[in-house]
Length: 398
Ligand code: NAI
Ligand code: NA
Image (cartoon, rainbow, N blue to C red; front, side, top):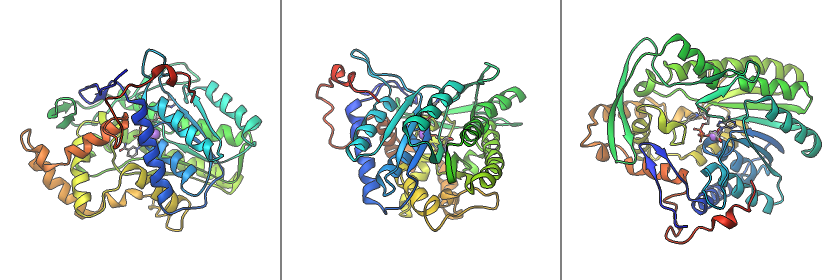
């Protein structure tokens, strides 16, 4: 089968399995060629198949730490007839590369929010993973979560609170920008978004792992958060998702008390920079902001893609000697994004953007390349005219 990209609006409808392989290999090479650090031996990553979770896993396995990893993700299986999701193949290629270096790379595909998944992972840690872990990274991004106790399905939304929001959003398919206005969220929508993207599920995981005594002394857990600047403030940090992130950050403070008392370890959030991922492509105006940011950061020689950013977070901060915590105890690798200079320049460009000039004012090309790369397209050195052997691919297991 010859696979060409299919995109609807800002939603990718397919992926290129061999392109995904090349992208994973390229990221592994970045981790290997970067500063090497000594880190945790045994790691669990929730949301490990793409974006920040995958970059974290690659850095930990190939960036000096040589970590054995368990990855949990929710992905669509590839069959003999149908291409699976990008994350499905990313899991396969990561595992193949890690095992080649003698590392354990175990994948669980399913719902991280469920008690069943916690049970399965726990049993695996106890029976086959050496009994204890050193680090839990929480990088799940989802629009829906079933509460494992009540069975109620909650849906998150990305809306402003007590105000309306309007702004441009990229349409990757049409290579156009579209004006979107979003109404203020209801109380129920806020509560549901906190349920899905707040800290409740992370807390279930950490408490279960501590109660079941599968964490080593000095155990750490980190979850990823976002703040951003004025351009996205109304729809992001002051909006429904911002409420969820605040909940996540408060949960870190609670969990930190537990983990520091019991294990002499630490729990915190890391506020990461804006990048192109499957999750962030849906946030109104975020894609335009990110495209402006890429351009402004590049002009300052500070443009740092997902893999490099994540590696710096681990090598210099979490397992390095310049941790950079803020007054609320959050790790701040996003400080590069949030300097006054970068933000002022971004706002000035953003305010001048029109449907006609956006391709010149922001780095749409780079945004699109990152977006296509997420699904294995536009990778350097991949022959997209050659046949992809789905039958063979379907025999590979994550
Ligand atoms: P992503 O969409 O690339 O990755 C999400 C991961 O969660 C995937 O591995 C997916 O399989 C997994 N997942 C989704 N639902 C699941 C479920 N029910 N059970 C198990 N796994 C599930 O997203 P991204 O952007 O890497 O987001 C990860 C975290 O980083 C989020 O908390 C996000 O808010 C945060 N973040 C993202 C930024 C960005 O610009 N993309 C900036 C700063 C923080
Ligand atoms: Na992730």
